[in-house]
Image (cartoon, rainbow, N blue to C red):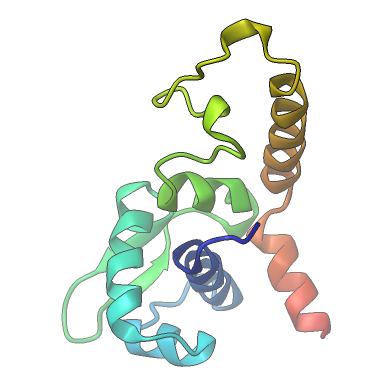
Length: 136
């Protein structure tokens, strides 16, 4: 099981903005700092803006900056901005349904794993990620 590339890049983009909190950073600079294609970043940033995590600043000296303090943004916030559905199994995706319904003995275990991951990612803020990054 792997996180999709778009989500990985979205997390890294928010991390770059967290490392430069308060500054306006160009799309090109973000792409260079995390070594991703600028065209791919151009797809990701609007999702982060739309969900209120990142602010787009227009103009010749424009770019992007965090819309909130880095301590108020969690990894789960980015997951929610990038992924349409974050389900470990089809049965946990409400839009897809489950043919086994409530009688499935496996579903509660998938649900526990998903809840644990969501809880963990909700506790990891970009303030702590930036702090850990600066230590390395």
